[in-house]
Length: 271
Image (cartoon, rainbow, N blue to C red; front, side, top):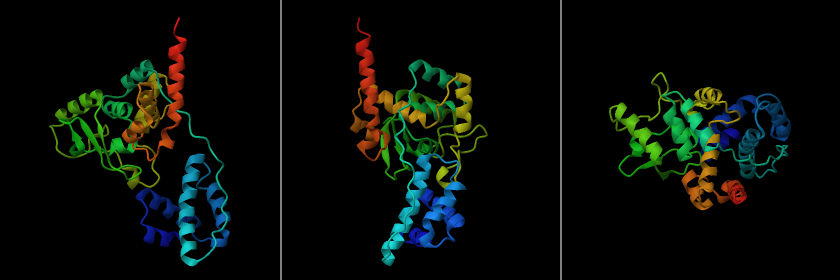
């Protein structure tokens, strides 16, 4: 069923990697033992994964099973659900902590961090950015490869414009090629082409956090930081959804609470 699903449905590359791993580890189980197969996988390959990751793996597995059962007129077997999780609270830094952290990145990695901080891109979107999609004249970035598959064009923040323009001139004004390179001059690996690799920017990010004395702030936290400050600066949720590339308003509703807290702080400062 997993093999058929990959051929018929043509899922996204990251999902194909998940399906291949599931096939290799539990593909020998019969359909009526799908729940036991999932239990075995959860206790081995999935034992150290966060609930959100487990939920995603199970969803992909069930998509294959349900598709196969529909095609064969079968009733899908029961597969235990993952414990329901609450959406993570938004994480954002004060302006002082933000600037201190940005100053702690290496010279090579700082342009990546500035882009994450002021554009709200996902790490993969930023690391895949190509010079051909950077328009300095119109001050815009075209995000050609996204998590949702929906391409988008976003205005370039002034600080990002300054960082990228300096980098572009330093590189000899290339018209194509990866914008961000590692310290060794190589492109960051594309996570959609690497099996289950971690965030390639995490190591240098963690080093910067240690220097700045900031804990619990991941590369993806920059996206929450950006969204939170966008709302606190007066951005409406629909515009935030479009700029950030979220697929629905439901996914940005958590930031409405940030706005309320910010307004309360402003009221409380009145004396």
